[in-house]
Structure formats: C-alpha cells, structure tokens
Amino acid sequence: MARQLDPKGIRTVGVITKIDIMDRGTNAKRMIMNQEVPLRMGYVGVKNRAQEDIINAIPVAMAIAKE
Image 1: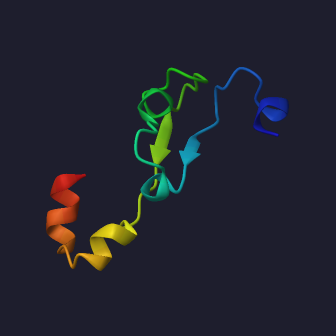
Image 2: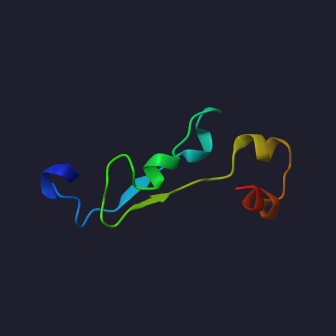
C-alpha cells in the first residue's frame, strides 16, 4: 500500500515489529539500516522484552544494555 501512495519512498517511515520474537540466526539489520527497501525517512525497529529474558528474570535495565 505504501508503494502505491509513495512509490519513491520519500515520505514513508518503515516500522519493523516483533524483532524480539525473531528466530535465532534471523537478522533484521539490513532492513533497519535502510539497505533492503530504501526509504528517505528510514526505519524504526520495535522490540519488546524477549520471553526468554522474562523467564530468566533478567532486569529490564540489563536487557536494554544487552540490546
């Protein structure tokens, strides 16, 4: 839909969600670095606490530092 309304990617901001539940070995770096589908405004990644961090009772501050 964004490509129809903004084919040159001039006023679109990409949002990459659910980074926290990506399988190990999967990497969103190229997309976040604006290398996959270039957008002038770039991308924002949204990451919640990983379930693994919650289960292991890792403090939020430590999880943010690890991120």
